Image (cartoon, rainbow, N blue to C red; front, side, top):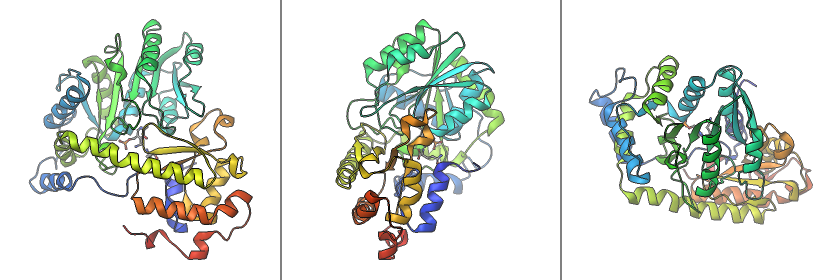
Length: 399
Ligand code: PMP
Ligand code: GLN
């Protein structure tokens, strides 16, 4: 412990000169005009001192306008929007606000690593419901069976990291019906809302009965390719948003003043920007899926996010963790062992996640390395992988 799997694997990519398809961050920054807007805010003295606790008015209005524009949702920017230090803080503040010791929170596993930590920080108990390959559809009967008298909330994530599943309107309606009939709160993590290739993203808050019980979370990190800025937001009823803000004020108090001005502008970018994100990533998804299949992985094609889940058993491996620890040395590529996202480790032991939010030539280099390493990948022997033979390092890749 002491470090997350993402940090561990990014460090390994650095020390081994590997292509890093592990931690989910793009290798190209977001729009230059948005970076310029942040720089201008700093230089003009906007946001350099503590911004308002709920976030600057411009950004709260922009978040409300975004929810109206894409989903037809009406939100009061003053009482129904809260700016947070990324979705990470939004998740933490929401779970700490809404869960009491002894409560149970249900989440579909595999799940994003902060969920377990934040449920634990709230003194609550996590109850996993497993999504299973090849489609990773939510099992509504299993969800129903997991609900007890202690269940307080459902923690959802669609589009789903790491599987790339995008929950359908019908699936969300069934989940919503259970939330209503058992009087559960829903915390809905929608950070990949604009990265959908098959199907459409439906915010569960838009379904009947959900407005009063849903905390919706999103972030600028993925949509605008500025993962280092840590600007996220929470939307919901005034009561729910107040509860989350009450916790947030003692976690970070406020965050990223100048970046808030820039993200307010980013949210207002034209439809063409949003369309281009998914169009660009769709091509990369298809490219990496085909290449990974060609290298011998079982590939579960994602409908959304920028991650591909694979299974390494066709390569003769059963342990994804060991596979990922060896892969930089064998092939000069870093990936994430999905087992870290599971409580039921047997369900995810042989799954490995690859990120495709990288330049085309970087993906091509990764596939080239995997193809050259195919012999050692599939035999599970031989430490002298292609990274070593070529002397290749990440530094030789175009940036
Ligand atoms: N939720 C999910 C599902 C994620 O993958 C991530 C990673 N970016 C986050 C939340 C955290 O988002 P942020 O970087 O805005 O804190
Ligand atoms: N969300 C990113 C991922 O899933 C990483 C964020 C982090 O490093 N905490 O890879």
